[in-house]
Image (cartoon, rainbow, N blue to C red; front, top):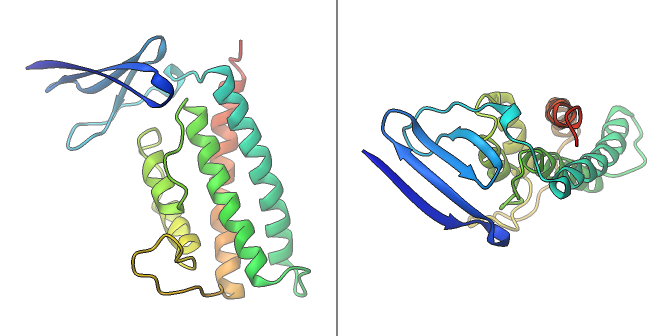
Length: 193
């Protein structure tokens, strides 16, 4: 049973989705992301990362977000490693949040995709479309980074400050996210037009 659905993405980009029971879900988009199978529901996921070449503007966004994230993360990780840090736990935590958000926005931009979330766990789940093998440790880092902020939480438990141990754990987890994002952006930079 073949079925084709046509629709519009953000910024009115036309795209076509082809559904075939044996092949899974395939998204074909006017020259972008040709031949990319994504997991929506119970269908098997197969992604050829090299088939997704971002538009120049999205690659610029990926590079810019990566640079911002690296700046926040460098300050955050250096401060967490010091006994008498110049910044308090509150500011360090804000740097951790900004780092995670910018790293995931950069990763999604590398795949020519605009992030539709800003919370760490939601960004992680969105990135799974393109990186289905993200380790559970990254998910745990996103949960840890997101658990101290309740501004977007229905539970509304209020604001708490992370402990120094929480900040160190965040730093180790964010480093792994940083390395992955840098690797993925470097892959596409090598084939830039």
